[in-house]
Length: 257
Ligand code: PGA
Image (cartoon, rainbow, N blue to C red; front, side, top):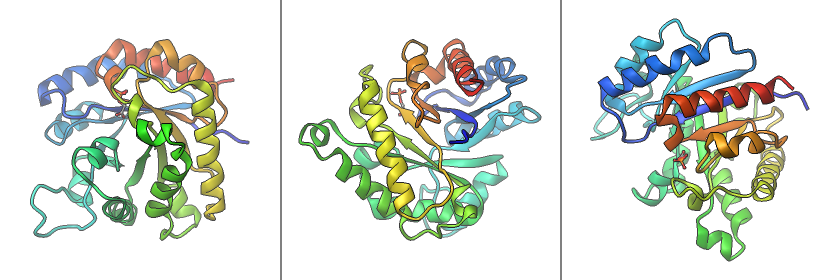
């Protein structure tokens, strides 16, 4: 299997003011110089996008948003359109994060629309999927991953153009922000399942699958060695430049093997 670049993506969630975001990205930029096979992505809060875009101009860091609406404009209070995000330098959008699914009640259908809208506008859709603890314990992990993936991807064209604009993040809900990382065998199993399912759905091209959920420099070295892990979506540890830089270094080490 030809490996794509390892993606280390930081999800800053509802943290950091614009000035704090500016400081963090400035601190991080030197760790992204001369990377060979790793891409660094960051998703600041909407109000911090301008500052982060300003600082990352000319660097290899890709900036994205934490959500996106499917329409270009209109009466959608509180939403942000792809074109607005692109104006702020966004090239990707996180979609279907578990906090949006479970705290804010976003349905599979809404998430599917967001994915379609992002792709149509030329943004990369970073689609998050993952089971809750209850779903894992009652044995429905695969059924949940299948439902979430099929809802979001089934209607998309299965051509190279669509596949090259998709990234999937497997994030078990019970591992997000809890310090409880999934085991190597749980991650391997879930990623293999996602890989197979995406292929069965008719996507000819490989779509990168990131792992997310309490990723830190202490556990990522082992996780990134899993063949079906193409990087990480990182919350807490991405808010500290030192930890994020260490994750980038581990990604680069894996990519170089
Ligand atoms: P965490 O968050 O690394 O803090 O667990 C991951 C995520 O929510 O994407």
